[in-house]
Image (cartoon, rainbow, N blue to C red; front, top):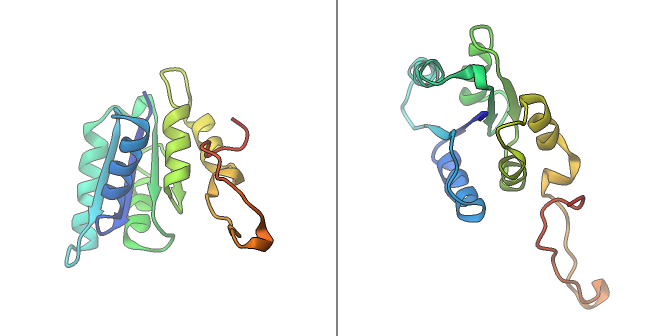
Length: 146
Protein backbone atom coordinates (compact mmCIF):
# COMPACT_ATOMS: atom_id res chain seq x y z
CA UNK A 1 0.00 0.00 0.00
CA UNK A 2 1.22 3.48 -0.85
CA UNK A 3 2.96 5.32 1.98
CA UNK A 4 1.86 8.81 2.92
CA UNK A 5 4.21 11.11 4.81
CA UNK A 6 2.99 14.36 6.37
CA UNK A 7 5.52 17.13 7.08
CA UNK A 8 4.94 20.44 8.84
CA UNK A 9 6.22 23.21 11.02
CA UNK A 10 5.34 22.15 14.56
CA UNK A 11 2.73 19.51 15.40
CA UNK A 12 0.29 20.47 12.61
CA UNK A 13 0.96 17.24 10.69
CA UNK A 14 0.54 15.12 13.84
CA UNK A 15 -2.84 16.75 14.54
CA UNK A 16 -3.85 16.30 10.91
CA UNK A 17 -2.98 12.60 11.13
CA UNK A 18 -4.97 12.18 14.35
CA UNK A 19 -7.99 14.04 12.95
CA UNK A 20 -7.91 12.04 9.72
CA UNK A 21 -7.82 8.77 11.64
CA UNK A 22 -10.68 9.95 13.86
CA UNK A 23 -12.79 10.37 10.72
CA UNK A 24 -11.51 7.60 8.44
CA UNK A 25 -10.33 5.05 11.01
CA UNK A 26 -6.83 3.73 11.76
CA UNK A 27 -4.51 3.90 8.75
CA UNK A 28 -1.53 1.85 7.66
CA UNK A 29 1.47 3.52 6.03
CA UNK A 30 0.57 7.00 7.28
CA UNK A 31 3.30 8.89 9.14
CA UNK A 32 3.85 12.44 10.40
CA UNK A 33 7.24 14.04 11.01
CA UNK A 34 7.12 17.46 12.66
CA UNK A 35 9.77 20.14 12.56
CA UNK A 36 10.21 21.50 16.06
CA UNK A 37 11.51 24.93 17.15
CA UNK A 38 15.29 24.90 17.36
CA UNK A 39 15.65 21.81 15.17
CA UNK A 40 18.16 22.40 12.40
CA UNK A 41 17.16 21.92 8.77
CA UNK A 42 19.94 19.34 8.39
CA UNK A 43 18.69 17.31 11.36
CA UNK A 44 15.14 17.44 10.03
CA UNK A 45 16.22 16.36 6.53
CA UNK A 46 18.25 13.50 8.07
CA UNK A 47 15.18 12.37 10.04
CA UNK A 48 13.05 12.35 6.87
CA UNK A 49 15.80 10.58 4.92
CA UNK A 50 16.11 7.94 7.63
CA UNK A 51 12.35 7.34 7.63
CA UNK A 52 12.13 7.08 3.83
CA UNK A 53 15.07 4.67 3.71
CA UNK A 54 13.39 2.47 6.34
CA UNK A 55 10.19 1.89 4.33
CA UNK A 56 9.60 0.17 1.03
CA UNK A 57 9.15 3.11 -1.32
CA UNK A 58 8.74 0.60 -4.15
CA UNK A 59 5.11 0.47 -3.02
CA UNK A 60 4.90 4.21 -3.65
CA UNK A 61 5.20 7.35 -1.55
CA UNK A 62 3.38 10.66 -1.46
CA UNK A 63 4.78 13.42 0.74
CA UNK A 64 2.48 16.24 1.86
CA UNK A 65 3.98 19.49 3.20
CA UNK A 66 2.31 22.43 4.88
CA UNK A 67 3.78 25.32 2.84
CA UNK A 68 6.07 25.80 -0.12
CA UNK A 69 9.48 27.26 0.67
CA UNK A 70 9.59 26.25 4.33
CA UNK A 71 12.02 23.79 5.89
CA UNK A 72 9.69 20.74 5.56
CA UNK A 73 9.29 21.50 1.85
CA UNK A 74 12.99 22.23 1.29
CA UNK A 75 14.08 19.10 3.16
CA UNK A 76 11.74 16.83 1.22
CA UNK A 77 12.41 18.53 -2.13
CA UNK A 78 16.13 17.98 -1.65
CA UNK A 79 15.47 14.25 -1.13
CA UNK A 80 13.61 13.90 -4.46
CA UNK A 81 16.95 13.43 -6.20
CA UNK A 82 17.57 10.39 -4.00
CA UNK A 83 14.05 8.90 -3.79
CA UNK A 84 11.08 8.65 -6.13
CA UNK A 85 7.96 10.22 -4.60
CA UNK A 86 5.33 12.84 -5.35
CA UNK A 87 5.52 16.03 -3.29
CA UNK A 88 2.28 17.92 -2.67
CA UNK A 89 2.26 21.30 -0.92
CA UNK A 90 -0.70 22.79 0.94
CA UNK A 91 -2.14 19.82 2.80
CA UNK A 92 -5.44 20.00 4.62
CA UNK A 93 -7.95 17.62 6.20
CA UNK A 94 -10.38 17.31 3.24
CA UNK A 95 -7.55 16.44 0.85
CA UNK A 96 -6.01 13.92 3.24
CA UNK A 97 -9.33 12.19 3.99
CA UNK A 98 -10.17 11.85 0.31
CA UNK A 99 -6.73 10.43 -0.43
CA UNK A 100 -7.00 7.98 2.46
CA UNK A 101 -10.49 6.85 1.47
CA UNK A 102 -9.35 6.39 -2.14
CA UNK A 103 -6.22 4.42 -1.20
CA UNK A 104 -6.21 0.64 -1.46
CA UNK A 105 -3.81 -2.11 -2.54
CA UNK A 106 -4.44 -1.37 -6.24
CA UNK A 107 -4.19 2.43 -6.29
CA UNK A 108 -1.14 4.11 -7.75
CA UNK A 109 0.76 7.19 -6.67
CA UNK A 110 -0.47 8.93 -9.81
CA UNK A 111 -4.15 8.15 -9.10
CA UNK A 112 -3.90 9.32 -5.49
CA UNK A 113 -2.05 12.45 -6.57
CA UNK A 114 -4.90 13.18 -8.96
CA UNK A 115 -7.40 12.76 -6.09
CA UNK A 116 -5.36 15.17 -3.94
CA UNK A 117 -5.24 17.77 -6.69
CA UNK A 118 -8.99 17.80 -7.43
CA UNK A 119 -10.23 21.34 -6.84
CA UNK A 120 -13.25 19.99 -4.93
CA UNK A 121 -10.86 18.81 -2.23
CA UNK A 122 -9.43 22.20 -1.38
CA UNK A 123 -12.03 22.49 1.38
CA UNK A 124 -12.26 26.27 1.16
CA UNK A 125 -15.58 28.03 0.60
CA UNK A 126 -17.50 30.92 2.07
CA UNK A 127 -20.65 29.77 3.86
CA UNK A 128 -23.46 32.32 4.19
CA UNK A 129 -25.93 31.16 6.83
CA UNK A 130 -27.58 34.54 7.25
CA UNK A 131 -31.24 35.04 6.37
CA UNK A 132 -30.17 36.15 2.90
CA UNK A 133 -28.26 32.94 2.42
CA UNK A 134 -31.29 30.78 3.13
CA UNK A 135 -31.55 27.72 5.31
CA UNK A 136 -28.63 25.53 4.24
CA UNK A 137 -27.31 22.30 5.68
CA UNK A 138 -23.82 21.01 5.10
CA UNK A 139 -23.36 17.80 3.15
CA UNK A 140 -21.57 14.98 4.92
CA UNK A 141 -19.54 14.11 1.83
CA UNK A 142 -16.29 16.02 1.44
CA UNK A 143 -16.14 15.34 -2.28
CA UNK A 144 -19.07 16.60 -4.36
CA UNK A 145 -18.52 13.80 -6.88
CA UNK A 146 -19.13 10.97 -4.39
